Figure 1 (cartoon, one colour):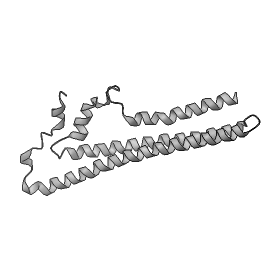
Figure 2 (cartoon, one colour; figure 1 turned 180 degrees about the vertical axis):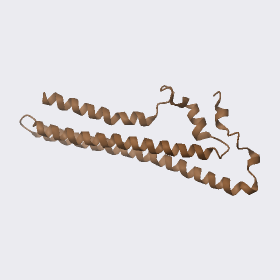
Figure 3 (cartoon, helix red, strand yellow; figure 1 turned 90 degrees about the vertical axis):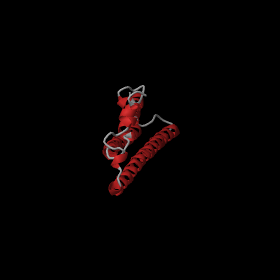
Figure 4 (spheres, one colour; figure 1 turned 180 degrees about the horizontal axis):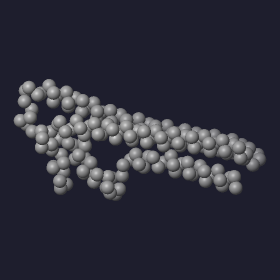
Length: 169
C-alpha cells in the first residue's frame, strides 16, 4: 500500500537511538506500550460481553411479555405493553450509554498508545494501521464498529415503540 512505510516507521527513532544508557528507558516504554495495547483489547472484549448481555436481556424481556400476553385469553392489557416498553427502553438507553462510554474509553487509550509509539521505532498501531484503513473516511474500507454498535440499541428502541403503537392503536 502506497505511503504505508512512511506512516509505519518513526524517523525520530533509529538504531543509533538505542544506546546502552537508554536501554532501560526504552524497555520501560515498550513494557508500558504492551500493557496499554492489552488493556485496549480487554476494553473491546468487555464491550462485546456488554452487547451480548443486553441482547440477551432484551430477548428475555420480550419473551416474558409475549409469554404473558400469549397466555391471556383476552386482549393484552395496554399497561402490560407499556411496562414492557419502559423496561426495554431503559435497557436500550443504558446499552447505548455503555457502548458510547466504551468508545470514549478506547479513544483515550488509543491516544495514549499513539503517544507511546512516538518513542518506539514503528507507529504500527496508531498511524500505519489507521492509514491502511483509510483513516475512517470511507465506510466501504472501514466502518468503526462502535458506530454500528451504538445504532443497535436505537434500532431496538424504535422497533419496540412501533410494536407498542401497533397494539395501542
